[in-house]
Image 1 (cartoon, rainbow, N blue to C red):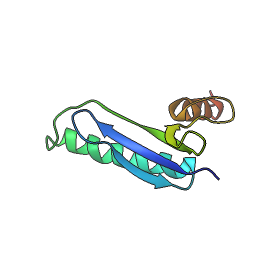
Image 2: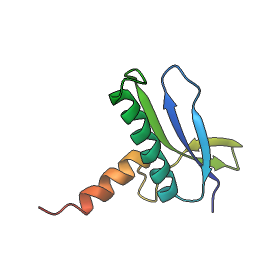
Image 3: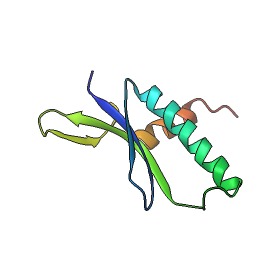
Image 4: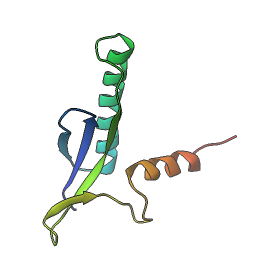
Length: 90
């Protein structure tokens, strides 16, 4: 399995990185961090902000972290958006 890390970045701060064992673990962590940050914004503790999050995979050949893509060529956000659309029933 490739080495992976999730990131959470709030504009004007240093990105937070954490190695993860799976795409699902990255999603769980990102959702938890986003939930906490959004709650603090709602409480007035943190100012409103611009943030982004995602998943990177270490490319041994290039010796650098690269954006993660699934087997269909979808990035982290696209992957979970497509997955939720597949599970949506009307």
